[in-house]
Length: 354
Length: 179
Image (cartoon, rainbow over all chains, first blue to last red; front, side, top):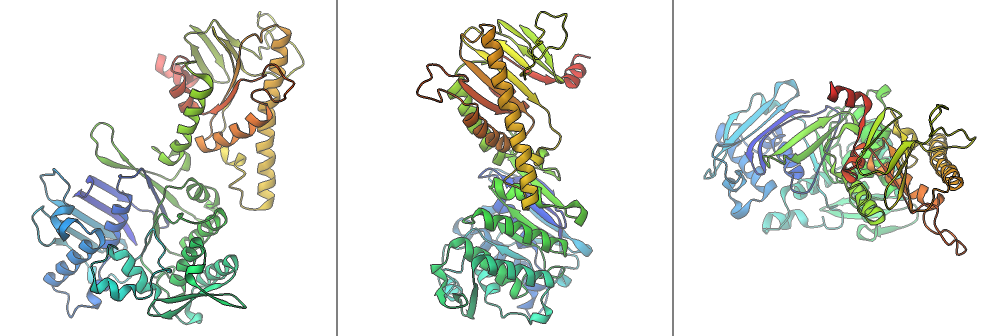
C-alpha cells in the first residue's frame, strides 16, 4: 500500500506531495494537470520484488537500471531520454519518492542530462512484494493477441502499462478455492451483467462465452471488455484484496454505460473494504458521484478526493485533498455543468445583473 | 441600491428600482403579503424586467439526487424529495405571478432565479425539470405572453459569478465581514 508520493521538478510537477487513503482515492483535474503522470509515477515506484524477480541479485546498479528502464517505458519521453522528464526550466534536480506501509521507501533523483536515476533511498524495497496493477485508459482485450511479443520486438506507441496489463491478464487462473470471496462475487456480478464471460486461452487469445455460444472478444461492447479486464485480474489473483498492491485505474469510465458505472463503483468499494487500495483518475461526474453516494461510513468506507489544479498565480500544479465530496475545490467536473448554467443565464437574461 | 435580507442571506441589488421581501409577514409594512397564497422570497424590479428569487439552503443535497439512488426504496424516496422540491418551487412561482398580476405588476418579462445550495450538476437537473413545468416561455399556441421568461437554478458561487451587480452573502459571513 502506498501512503505518500512526493514529486519535485518531475514532468509537470514543481513540488507536489500527496497522501493516499488506504482505501479509495479519486483523482480529478483538468487536462494537463498531470493525473496520468501522477498515477504512472506512483505505479512506477511500486517496485521491489517485481523488479528483483527477474534479476539475479539486488545490487544498487541493477536496481537503478531496472527502475530507470521502467520509468522510460512508462512515460515514453522524447528520444527515450530520462532528462526529458525533468521539468522544463527547473534548476534543481528532479526528485520522486514513495513511502509504503510497513516502512518501505523509494526515493530517486535525476538531472536533465542524467542517463540513469540516482537511488537515494530504497529502504526495505527488496521485501516489497505486493504487485501493483495499472489499468490504462483503453481496454486491451480487443488487441492483446500477440501484443506482448510485438511490444518486445517493435517500438510500439503504447506505454508499458499496456504491456504490463496484458501480461497480468494472461496469467493462469488461481485455484477457485484460494480466490477471495469478494473476488468471486465481483466476477459473478460482472458475468451476470454482461450475460457471459471472457475466456482466456493464453498468448492473448480471448473470446466471450455465453451459455449457448462463443464469440470474438472484439464483437463485444467496449464497456463489457473493460469490465471483463477487471474480472480477469481478479480471476488471476493479480488483484487480490488484502494481498495485492495498489490498483491504479486511469479513467475507468471511458465506454462504460451508467449501469456498469454503478456496478464498478460497488465492486471497487467492496474490494477496498477487504483491503484493496484503489487509486483512480477520472473526468466523469457520474463516477465521482457514485462514490459519494455509495460509500457507507458504517462499513468504514473511506474515499479521498484529490483535485489537481494549476495555481492561477504561479501556474504550478497543486493538489487539494478532501474526504467531503461537496468540498472538492476546484472541481472541474462540476464546473463543466456550471459553464452550461452560465451560458443559459447569458442567453436568457442578457446583461441583467451584470 | 436596494438591500434585502431573507432566509439568512443578504442581497444588494445595485441597479434595482425596487426590491423587497415578497413573503413579508409583518402586517405593519407596506409590502405585507397577506394573501393565502404561496410566495417567493424576494421580488426585485429593474428597468427592463422583474426577477423573482427563491432561496433554499440545504445541508444534505444527496436526498434530492434521484440518479444516485442505490435501491428502489431509496429512489422512490428521493424522487419524492426531488418532486417535492420541484413542485414547491413551481407553485411558489405561479402563485407569486398571480399575486403580481392582481397588483398589475406583470408588465415586464419575469425571470425566476432559485438560489439552492446544491452542486452545479444537481442544480442543472432541477432547472431542467422546473423549466418544463413552470412552464418557461409560451407553453400553448393560445398564449400571447409567457408567464416566466426564464428560470435558473444556481448556487451561491454561481449567483455571484453571474450577477455581479446583485451580490449575495450569508448573513453570518456578512456580519463577520462588517465587524
